[in-house]
Structure formats: structure tokens, C-alpha cells
Image 1 (cartoon, rainbow, N blue to C red):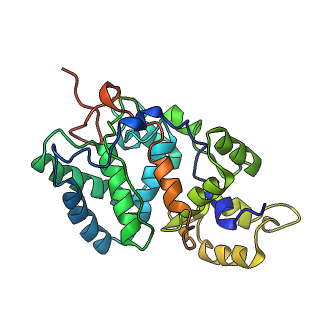
Image 2: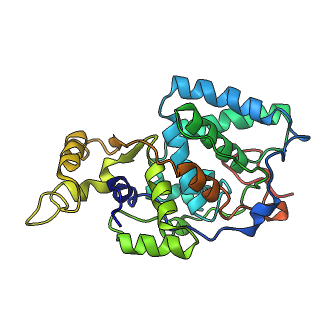
Image 3: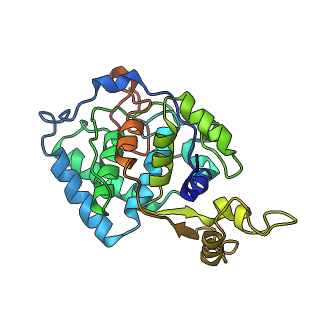
Length: 286
């Protein structure tokens, strides 16, 4: 079957997935109904003005959410800052380009929720819910977000390299990895294509396919020539500006279903996780 070009570009930044965890059976839509009844309202009041003032927030937060879930599950482990010589997921170079706007919206939401209901709402639930709200705010589909995730106890840089693919990963390997984890090809394309519909792929990730591809071809022959030409124009100065990015196309209608599925990957519940007081650091053990 033909795979959309958008999916080909997405291979540069999304990982093979970890198995779907049975822990998601402990999640629910009304998890905070009694312990933090204003959770959804507070999230909406934080997310909406942030997106209005910083339009890149939606794309940035979605990317952080993917990078979190694909490495050891949706447990906010990607947020942990390196300390005392310990390299966390944030230390890996593929995560260096994760945008500060996404971190800012998480900090704002966590601060407001800690005032309203201290030590109740996890950072992983904040990230999952903020992502859904932002997708909807910028015109994407609404989908259900189950709640009750706990924040992980582990954030290891080495887990990123083994979980996130690079621009030279073959399509055959990507398809094999996703089908092995229970995703259909249709879900895979919807998830990877839709994953950047709100935003961008950094030019440096796919530049080898549109500049000096080989001795006989300037661009990868598998790419649409017209689209490749447009990308070359957008990314002309990527060597001097490593943050330069190309914005992507409209969202797949299957994206919402795929997002529901990925949002419960490897979730931690009960004693397998914690509710961090600071989303960027593990709680101090007594």
C-alpha cells in the first residue's frame, strides 16, 4: 500500500512502541471527580490563553507527549531534568529540541492544580490532558483521555536511543515494530502522520533526504518532487539555524482513535508510580 509522504518524514522522530499496558484498566474518565472536581476547568483555563499567546504550544506539547509515551510509557519521565551526573531522557540529543512552550504550560497547570488540590493530580495526567485540549483548540479532533496515571520513578537517557528512531530507519522496520506492538498499519500511519499535523518536523531530521541525497540524485527519489522542492525552500538555511522546521499537512480522521490508544501505553498506576510535586524532579524519598 502507498504510505503518505507525511509518514515518511515522521520516521525521523517517532519510536517503535512499547506494549499496551493492562494498567490502563485502572484508569477512568472521572478519576478526579471527588479529589479534584475542578481539574478539567483548571486545565482549560490554563491551556487556552497559553495557546493564544504562544501558537506553537499545541505542536510542542504534542511532541513532548509522544516522546514521553514512546519511551517507557506515558509517565512524564521525559520531563525529569538531569541531576548529579545522572542523564535522564531529557539529556538525549533527540529531546534537546523539545520546546519550552510545552514545559511552560505544564508548569502553569501544575502550579494551579497544586493550589486547588495538593498532591492529587499527576504530571502525566496533566501532559495527556493538555495535549488533548490543545489539539482540539487548534481544530483537531476531540478524543477521550482516561485519567489516573502515576508519574514514573525512572528516566534514563539510554532508553531513548533504543526507543526513538532516527531519519535512517527503514519503513519495513517501522512497520514491523508497530504491528508487533498491536497497531495496524492504518493506525500507525494515522498516528505518525497526525502527530505532526499540528506542527512541524525539524529540518535537520530529514535534510539528508532533500539535500545531497546521493551521487546521482540531489533528493530521495521516493519523495514527491514538488513537495521535496518546497521542503528545500523552507529548509534552505537549516545548517545555520538548527531549530528551523517545516510545518505539516491536515490531520488524518483516524488520528483521534490512534491517540486514545497511544495515551494508555505503559501507564503506571497504584504503587508503580507517584504524584510528583515538581513535574521536573522525582519526589524526595523520606
